Length: 205
Image 1 (cartoon, rainbow, N blue to C red):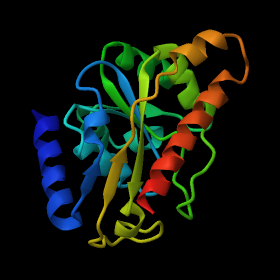
Image 2 (cartoon, rainbow, N blue to C red):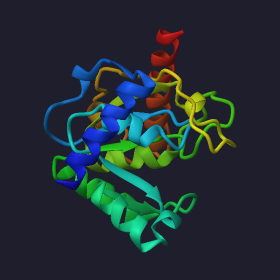
Image 3 (cartoon, rainbow, N blue to C red):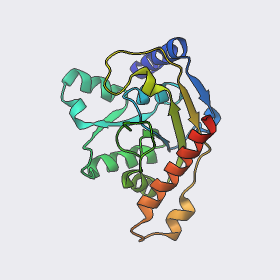
């Protein structure tokens, strides 16, 4: 109930105040585990991307955000779980794989952190590990405009238009089977995802 109510509220706000436009929503599978892999330019990326997806999406969030008990409760109700960034958090990876294998969708940011200048950064191997262990498809996504809504060092929202574009699902099954034991498999998966996100960016220019 909590998720449904706040999902609707965020969606209405996104539509009314930020004129959010969605491209390729039909590319998101209606059931089964799937990773939505998006670029990352703003703190507002998770709610903007999540609110335009009709399914209940799972999120990874920085572990320090869970230090406040009230905020931690809200995050968990919003289907988020903590991850220690920059540590190769095995517990978080295990939890992500578990949820995906249960048939739940998950939003991940392959770059690991926000881009300071809006340019796409190199993807981290972590997303490749999760893809390889879960075996689910990946829907690439590109969000445009959220960095203008809340600039990196600003505390004020600006009413700018936001676009969220979803690409066709990528199936890595063949690549995983052919490259088991290859130490570059995880980084290669991440690289392929970022290449597709870059293509979505080009389509919006």
